[in-house]
Image (cartoon, rainbow, N blue to C red; front, side):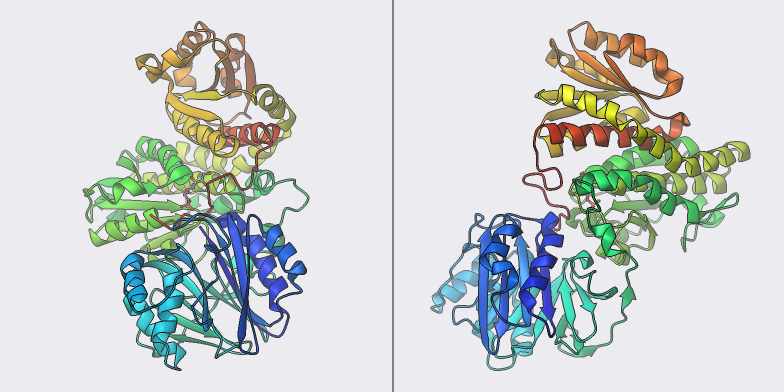
Length: 608
Ligand code: F6R
């Protein structure tokens, strides 16, 4: 949620920290701050609001002086957004400054204990307790103090630490919260997301749970939780920094919508080898597959919606029962799972706390886990038994677009792979679906060619307060994602409904002019959808249909129509998703919303 960057090198630190924070702004953004050491004293500057405010307060990074520093963007959890609650937090005597992501669960007890010892706190945050504890335990050996503090705090954390006695050094610690160390030439970095340091280096090391990193300009040393040195292997991130920039688009969201043909190609093409699907190192063989009695798909938000699309597809092709679960519910539901259940964990960021907890629980109960993840070496990718990366590239806009469609594509690959092994799909159908899958990128490009038409409808409906999305089968699954996209970025209340369910209560909300987007891509369900649409219209509702060419005759019974390119009925959710993303984007644009950074939301939700 919040973002961390740290720099130790030979250049003025502040501009590097500011630029890094800008790149992290999508993670959380009600306030920000930096701390820089300059020959023994720690200078701190903080600002409420966007990074621009911090930029102004530091004269574009000309001040404070110093070549070592840490920075933070905050998404408030404990204490309102304010200068005093923003990070970095400094210990009472100014010896330590810390930036923290996560939640210190026992902060109240620790704070009370320190207050009883005469320590004075400046903020309402849980994070300040780390700085005050460091000061409390510090007797000249900063590593000792850090190790003691790690033993005292519980909860989740990624922390960057400066100590005034060691002005060339940054320390970093983490538990259940992402933190990477970036390795440069005569400069080193810490970051909660490697996008923040990508313009300086492509070589990173993941800090593990309970580990410590000590960085100077010329060296990085790692320690375990007992203070013993650790050897860690760096990995290379091939993402290009231009991928993390807007590249001429007004918003990251629109850029990422347009990146979908490339993202789906990157996710699908390398895995389709002739008539074979090769899923990286995942050992799908007859023995493993025939043991699967049930599949649980687990994720949050859009990842969960991708799972619902995947459920329909996998059940149809593999004839295996699939449960799709919200990670936050799964963890507390005492799930029935064991080694006959395959658990598919979906997460773009690979760091979502609820999803990570679900993965750990599934593993503990003996289930084999496969993670569908975008961010390389993220916590979920590392902890799952197997990982299938989506190659969407960095996703910066808070609302996921290419992250979601590549997850759906990956689920199609998994479904077809299992179906082929189980012989639940005919050879002809299997080959046809492989061909269709590889044609999807071109079809997305064609869907985007009609962007003006989608924009016109978006402009027309932008003033509405409430929108319904209806569909049947996978169109219902796609409706869920369409409604989420619209509400999160445009703040219009949107609700997705299984079209046949409307009459069981919700239809009472339809009145003159209520907008309903009806998804009509499932030819077998056409006549049923037609009745549902008529029921909406006869109550005065306005219906904009999103249909496939096979169902184009729905035009006669719709107030507007958006056509997706012709495609197999089983794969339409990716194309309807693209159209609904564009629709949500232009509705939000017409309403003047902050599209890439919707209020109250953060990209990577690392708290439960
Ligand atoms: C919606 C959205 C969220 C995420 C959810 C899971 O546009 O982006 O609903 O899908 O927070 O995030 P990941 O996939 O990173 O686990």
